[in-house]
Length: 58
Image 1: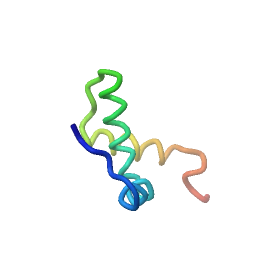
Image 2: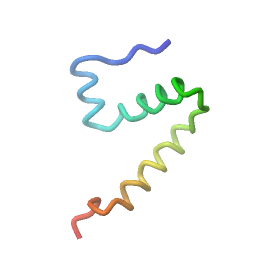
Image 3: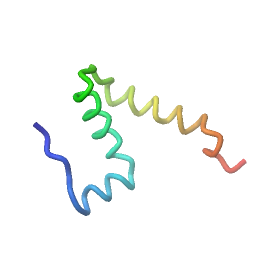
């Protein structure tokens, strides 16, 4: 069982986006779903950001 970071460490992980991976793994475990690889997860996340209407200023 993995312990979740608390306090300042958790805050920094939230700020950098690293906590999204932890949250994703927890959700997969809860739902009984096989998680994607870290690389697939990051690729999907980058695609979502690139295609978001507010992702770019122009």
